[in-house]
Length: 247
Ligand SMILES: [Zn+2]
Image (cartoon, rainbow, N blue to C red):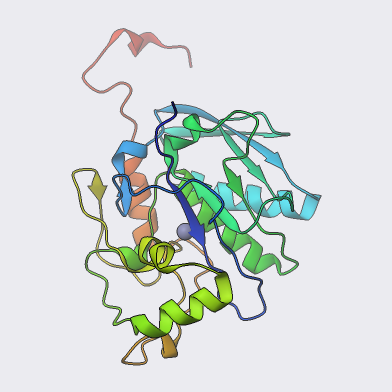
């Protein structure tokens, strides 16, 4: 009975990284956006459970959460160890690829399943960047390279071939996560931004004009702006009985 759950993925592009896929996870073409306002968490506390291998991984994920938290005044992240939370992050090697359910679609996931998987990686910078990207999805962010105003001139035939070889994705998966662009009533967007953590790196041989977008490792100004817009507090707007709320 659960509604389609939107899972989004991250292709780690540094050449030394293993491939990632969400092919075994439920994917839908539900309403999407650069940020999708329909996936927004309500104001308040979001419990985040970390089921991670070691303290280094935990520290990196917490650091990535903190980077987003600076720009989400409506939310408070309550981070706990284990598997019991609204957002459930694991690096269990029984799952493949790095992926996250988008925003509050996490509520539609079975409680005994993770809502985000991060591939283990000994390169702390890459692992942290992957965590930042997936946390973005978990907050309702979508892929920046799928921005309607993106300027990437994909060599589609090449990308279909190369991503199929490296990730095992079929044409539908590649269209879904790379080529399709976002439209619809729930789209919240800022100008197209190649510095966004939500943008895949692109390589010269993937485009017909040789354009490249380097791997990003932190939130761009655009990321900060859009997430702050999405998570400006709403709870007390219009005035209500909570004006005397406890401190
Ligand atoms: Zn992604």
